[in-house]
Length: 571
Figure: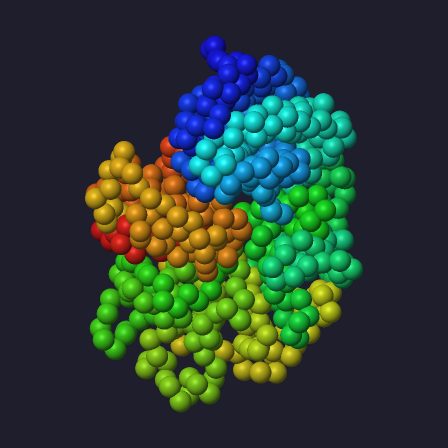
């Protein structure tokens, strides 16, 4: 394929200098800069609008990265991640060095957090190693007149330097690339071998779990280093790092207890994000959790459509059917019941629960309350009455942080006490003490949840090709066609770009998939298969620069939280 050259672009820029800002539209296209192709994909409408979208394309042979670094998916994502971070660091040095009005001269690219995610901003072809790096640039203007000289600085001085320092293998030491790939291999190895060791999670000795602050996900300086209790210690013989020791969290029901501010929730939070790989130096590189793990919590006010919550709530006084339950304003208990059965439907084999963010009446009813308000008069069957059935009959394990109720000691297979951020295995002592107290009597029959087939269809007449406006609100949610989808309580969404991808997925479902006769499970399985095969191009967003891949569990969560955009029904 032949392209215009960098000289052709310079001629265009010189020709439009000082003309009205719309003249920048003439620059749209692809230009050969020798070592790479620069594509101007979208030109902003004025200097105060969202910056223009550009991309750099480099042939695999010129980039020069060894095929072993991108042939396997986990290695390819790790390589994309390190390239993107390095490009972003260099690009940031040049942002706003070109002058002008509004957003003139701004240079930006996706800024990954501590997790390693598949992102649309940097992609590598698994077959030939071709690289595409997408970024944004504010085309300079004086008022609303083109400042070609300033854009020439960006495209001919700054950008080539950024490309040279980050997009070629020569920009990296052999040890740097090898270390990055080896870490990805070792993290994958642990995750792949949890099952055979009978584990749901692993926390390596030496891990740093506390974060710097509530608004920083960086590791805390001088934090207590994690060390496994001897009785829970397991070893993995990793392909590259060799033997690694740490705490294995076994299948079953695991209780995390301890005094306030001693690290209970910190441990659980590390396990929540352990479904993702982490970068070197994060402190949680070897905190690895079952990838299907889901954090469950109460979500007062959320929308529920046709959820079978009868496993937890029955015999409502108004006669409402809890086998096909819908509400626009869920209570704490009904919302947590819905979250739980939806997680089963999404294929989760591990629940992560913190007592502090749970509905109290959903979690436990103590003996005195049962005597005063008889079980027959209470429609809520608490989680404590179902946690054992969920494990023994459905294979779903639970890791629960508890700080006030000891009733779960009777149910727990493992009890970990956090004391000054140090874990202690107190299972035997907890069981001895629990034996002195009468166990919680459930008074309900055994029951195991079987997810009913739930069907979806579009709640709005949105067709393929329609101009559909989407807006992302960080990790709190997004809107599609002015309809909000709230995700702020889906705590394993760790990046706004995942939220943006969920918005794109919803648009794709509305325009391509949601019709009579399609189940939620079938829809998500088909969608995940397409995403696996074609990545972001599967939802028509292959050229986007601001997407990160969510898990299947978050896709289910998004569908279940749609109010008017999707209609869900049983049968």
